[in-house]
Image (tube, rainbow, N blue to C red; front, side, top):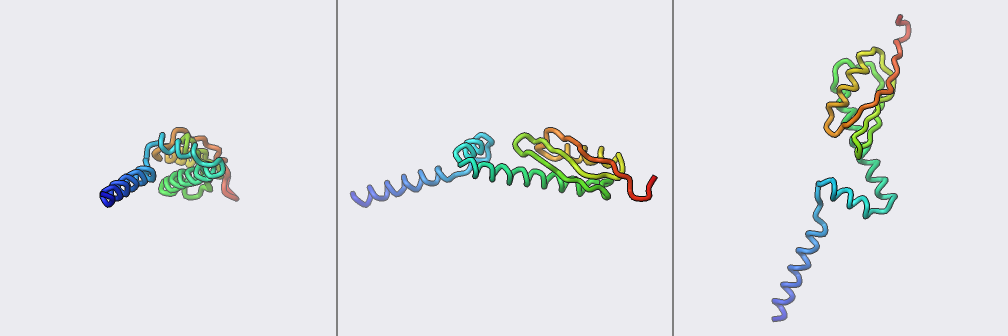
Amino acid sequence: MKIRFMIAVAGIVALSSATCYAQSDTPEAQTAQLAAMSPHAAKKVERAANRAFAKKVRQALMKTPGIAGAQVTVFAKAKTGAVTLAGLITDESQDKAAVEAARQVPGVTSVTSNLELRLPEGGQ
C-alpha cells in the first residue's frame, strides 16, 4: 500500500514538473514569461532578440546584389518589427535595394532609411 502511494506521488510530481518547465512558442506565453522576469532580465532578453532580428536583416542585405560598396548598419526592434538602416551608400539604387531587401525579411513591419549618399573620392 505504501509503495503504491509513493509511486503515485512520484508520478504526479514528475508530471507537474514537466508541465512547469515546458516551453511554449506562442507570443502570449513569451510575453507572460517576460512579465514574470525581473526588469533587468527582461531587458537582456529583449536586447538579445533585437540583435538576432538585426542579424537576419544584415544577412539578407549581404545576399542582395548591388549593395556591395555600401556601409549599412541595421537597428531593429524584434517586438514591433521596425527596422532602421543607417550608413553610407555610393549610389541611390543601393538605398532602394537595401530597403526592399529588409522588407522581405520575415517579421519586418516597417523600414526607415537613414542612408546617406556619398560619392566615392574623385567621383563627379
